Length: 306
Image (cartoon, rainbow, N blue to C red; front, side):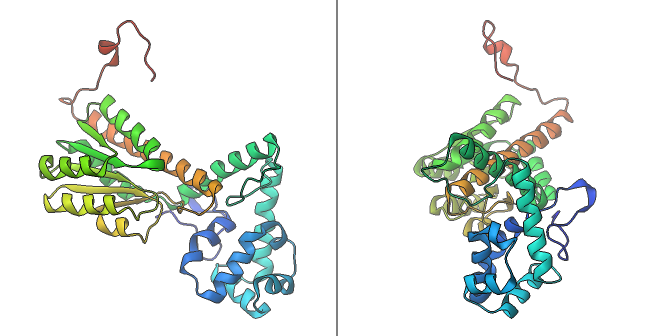
């Protein structure tokens, strides 16, 4: 995957890939940290502005740990020490302020925020999500998934609730390029369809940001018994769903716990599903026998969205 170098999580990367936000890096690794290190990470994320300016002693006090622990945390994050980590956070905060994005990913929208502040939070959240998603996407896995979808006899897509928008659009786009695809948002309907219709060479695409949907995991296991290919678009690389499918597409943005993180996740879902669709379209153009849907035939007197 195109991850930034471990020695400098927020430093420049090769190939023009945008650097990862140090705060996003800390948020991503937080679930894997031991309790003491997690205290420091939580203190940094709770107040990024203070973390980019305060002394190591002040941060240790807020985290309920020692200065030595804060130093070890900085080194574990890939920095030479706390001053380097603090400078990276301050620089990241500075970029946000200069761009009008005073609030970083994970900041909840308060009841007293103005419309301009809310706009800044949402714009900053989505811009950072796109940048960080690019750093984590496994393009090789996306290409593998696209090849399976392009060659499939039938494609079934499943998503529920907040996972619907990106997957609904993927379904619509696949139909537009002539892929025989069906969409399901009812677990019962999807279970019936995949257990009776899928054959070897068919594909099931599951959209589930948390990676913990019992319905999605059950569907994945059902399809594997029929020798079909299972693909998951998700936000939790260690989740049950990620382990249950043939091709796991982590969007680079974890599921999160607050609404601004939710927005970030949805942005990364859309990026991944859009890229997947374009890669499928590229695969299909190489086969002269595969036709694309001409919507003008269906809507001769109406304009159609591109």
